[in-house]
Amino acid sequence: MAAATPHSPPPQQLSSPFLEYIRAPGGLDKVVLRGRRSCSVEIRLFGGQVTSWKNDHGEELLFVSSKAIKPPKPFRGGIPICFPQFGTQGNLEQHGFARNRFWAIDDNPPPLPVNPAIKAFVDLILKPSEDDLKMWPHSFEFRLRIALGAGGDLSLTSRIRNTNTDGRPFSYTFAYHTYFSVSDISEVRVEGLETMDYLDNMKGKERFTEQGDAIVFESEVDKVYLAAPSKVAIIDHDMRRTFVVTKEGLPDAVVWNPWDKKAKAMQDFGDSEYKHMLCVEPAAVEKPITLKPGEEWKGRLGLSAVPSSYCSGQLDPLKVLHG
Ligand SMILES: O=P(O)(O)OC[C@H]1O[C@H](O)[C@H](O)[C@@H](O)[C@@H]1O
Image (cartoon, rainbow, N blue to C red; front, side, top):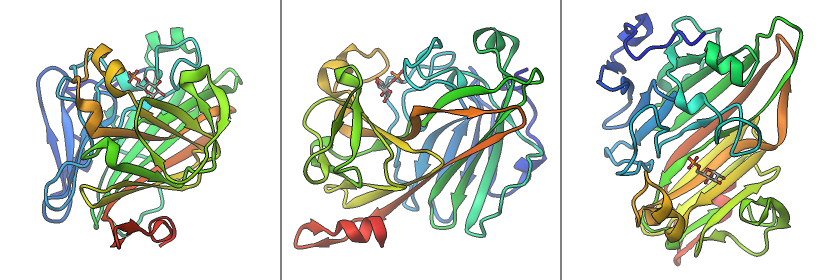
């Protein structure tokens, strides 16, 4: 049952000076994590979705559309959670229902190893409602820890447990649909995915192998990179900033930018906003994850934003990916 409502009282966990629970009308209650200087992370209970991540200068690092729609529609930007289905790969609504549900604060989560670099964190939980069970007849507990590190890095750890009592396993696909804010998509490079195999969603999921150097963008892209490395870098030349994306338990990485035509067709997205965003989404898409009753899966996303290190205008990819 989804016990979560946007009006549930803030629990004990939220009494830390690094955490704030903010009530807002229209199902927009949120939790704010605060770090050093102006670092912060905002999480909406609707969707269990990170909607803001700021660095210590207070600059926003995630893209959120100016046309984003309020609940009950999914929210365009930040880090939507795609579960139990990625995309249209099944009978459920696009990207599954988790991004469209009210999550609850998990006041008493099972322990996770504590990283001493973590400044503030919050634990959320999603359980299926009666209606969810009609669409996807599996009982589960989805625990999500969102943590802000001392250096301003952000991590999301998902733990999904099969709580079926009828002995049945279930399978799902999953993604952290991360929208990065970039200065100009035409100036952005992604390193770490070159030479990888991918499924092209724009070509009926046909399989190709990436050729050449770092990935650059000059038209619509919607690809699922398979068995992608655990570290990928998004290099924003104009901002002199590199996002380092790390992933655990998530074999694939989806890369998406709708470009101009699709942008115009999207109701909750500005016509030119494609220039200022890029989705790089650690995911489990090609091979669904299967859990037997009592089994738990863990998938982690780590994000940091570091100044790009240039030498004669060239970024040293080894430094970013292995430094
Ligand atoms: O519009 P949404 O349902 O949020 O989906 C936005 C995009 O998500 C992913 O990146 C998929 O690969 C795309 O095919 C899809 O268009």
